[in-house]
Image (cartoon, rainbow, N blue to C red):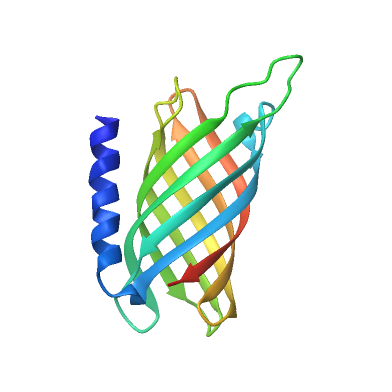
Length: 161
């Protein structure tokens, strides 16, 4: 089932990519884990892609997909395997000012590594335009899973292609 979902959303992404590139965004981030997983994982990093449609002059929305990789840290002689997620979400972005935006992604993060079933995915974020087509983003990533949650605070950059 996971493979079918991955193939379907990859095809969706390539379909959007084949159209006009005006709303296609691609970026990356690095973060520090917080909450339940901070004892076992330290840093995480990942990439995000979305295709944003203009809903109004100040609001955009569209599909988003990404890849997150959490690095395990040594904990009393035990180092867990990397945690990996494939978030599939709806994304929204409101331009609060000319160079400042607030937004969020909501969806489901598929767990890729063994023993990771994934869960409800949410990611509030704020952005600041630092150059034409380039935003600096600060975000909080959360994945609510059975028996716990994955969370991190992230700093990244998003490019409009």
